[in-house]
Image 1 (cartoon, rainbow, N blue to C red):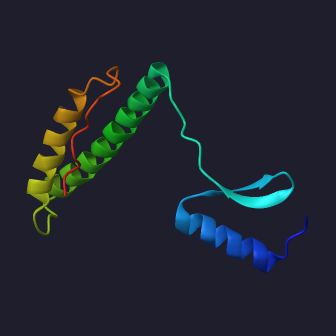
Image 2: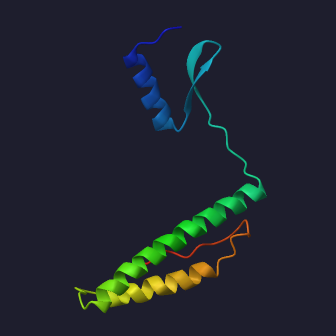
Image 3: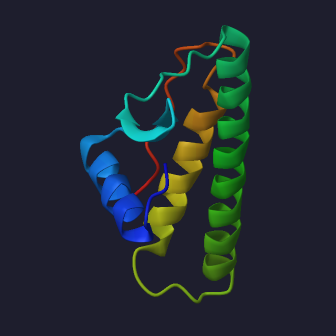
Length: 110
């Protein structure tokens, strides 16, 4: 079956609104329930490790910039408090056991 761009767009919008997928079933474009992905424990652990590394890299970057600002006496507002908060966050982050499938990561500083 052939669909016009307008028909396809209308179906895509409806699928998005209803949290469904567009699939061709028996030659017809239909709305379908999304299938949930089940990750293995090993996959979850690998995701945790990657996430922890990314968060740690972000914290290091924020800390380095804030430390430079303070070292050069260029702070404008609460940057000393921000530095302290990011350092605390980095310490909490290092304590996260990424090999735990239920690992809880600390909230980033505001």
